[in-house]
Length: 112
Length: 205
Image (cartoon, each protein chain N blue to C red):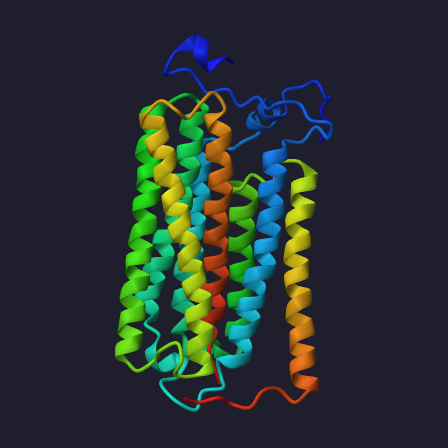
């Protein structure tokens, strides 16, 4: 935070928090994106670009909730760094597991 | 901004004790926890992606998923994030009645989501997909089951907040408590945003 240490930090943050009307606006956008996600799932002509489109929309929804509803956009940079570190580590785990899995030949299909 | 001085309808104090870092320790802890939860769910989603196409027994993902049904569940959970921030906004301005309405609405939407998940699990088991049927079944039930457990824990926390407010025990830092539990609630929502896309919408081979 760049505010003076003696300032009531949360009050400073609260003054930047969105108004309820803005929250409703964000929720409306999230609902519209979800509807588009489901709609394009059924459009066969978009099959070739379906995965990137879905991922982009998912990232937008994820970011909107984190930035607006979780107030990361308005909060201390430290919180943002902590959370982003977790997200990056999750992707690292994903990459490491995929690499090990496929360089080691992967597991055989397991049935009952 | 003293709540005790201004009575029940006064905005609850959101002023935090000053720390050496200038950052609220409890908030720092919850963000650290949520960061670690990213790793937890990231690992489970990775496992699901590795195993979902390795089905030699039981139904395959696209044979049992009911996208319209899950879309409604996703919408319900998404809207619970809205009611959660409205609950926080209400308690921050000292509107306890509004807070109780919105926090109960959030818990109710969470319960609707969990009810939907129980129904979905039951229909999958009836279709022949159990935890031990295939690696896909194991990965699916573990991922969505753990998410459901997180939502259930969130519902209990929300109902605790409601009870504490009704009993007048939310305390002068009530808005801070609501914000911390709200962060957890929004986190289970963003995890579902990823699960809905990765597990349900992205087609399998």
